[in-house]
Length: 391
Image (cartoon, rainbow, N blue to C red; front, top):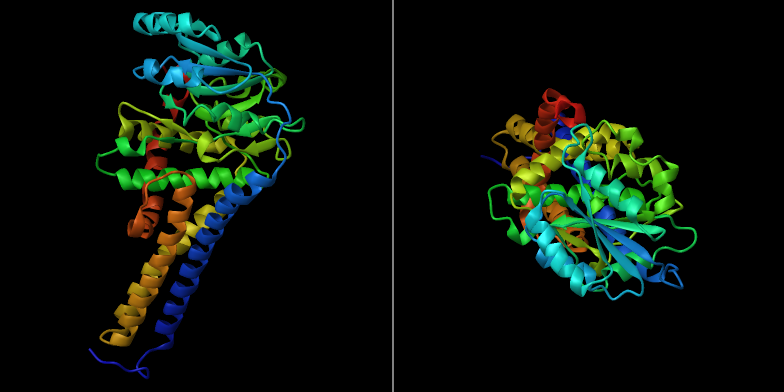
């Protein structure tokens, strides 16, 4: 190997320049997203107007699936420090064990109400059916949806969500993430990165006035919106869509708020987390075709720009071999960009209560487009399974 500037061709210089520009653009984009989320939590949320009087609310808990932790998690919802609320649990008619738990809790919590969803509904999403039953049973004008496998952060959860319902606000998008500490299986870092990246994307879109998604584990809105838009009628043939297709239909930028303080973020517990994440990826990829696609092009562009970095640097090193200056320049560029991406993703993860990925984040960013492509291929081959008529 040798060191010589004179032997570096124009093609090599161009490749290094393209890698540097593409990498810098990706790092800058991630840093801007991190700064925007952090500013939203530390500045915007603390300075905006909140409701002078907390409105009555009906909390709807879907207990048709993932009911193992109902006896542990439901009391935390029932014990909220809130002036006026009811909790409506929608359970399966044949779930005898669930009924016993709810009956015992009913004795101590009179504001708990129980209703049941019939099992024999094969042409309707179980999730949507549970939500429709709960919303129709709700006594109050505002509903907040969650699930039986959700752990609320404390007794201030309702206050943090409901404080946003000023007269001009109709929808509050809360955030929910899975139980990170419970994931010890292979691929856990990729699941964390995917969850954080996806969450940052739709949350920032909503913060910028273009809401297109929410999560039913932590979603609040005025009940009249459900009836004004005929419920889930526009996605009734789909198993999914109760939080992204539906929110994309009813949410308007001016009347929608995001709540991201630590006391509002819900933790979701799954019995089989990798399988649940797999199903969620398949579901999101399919229903994304029906939502307002704000920011999707930028996301895809930045992902491919990040892919340009190693491709260009590898090509430059090969063309200039055995010039050590080019190899040294490539290593320095990768190191600088690596640190920048790790820092930005760490800040985003801190806001969304995710574990630190440290220096694995840049590598995961390279791998995510390939994983997404794999899921798109699988979804294209199994589209029928997304329709209620298939089951």
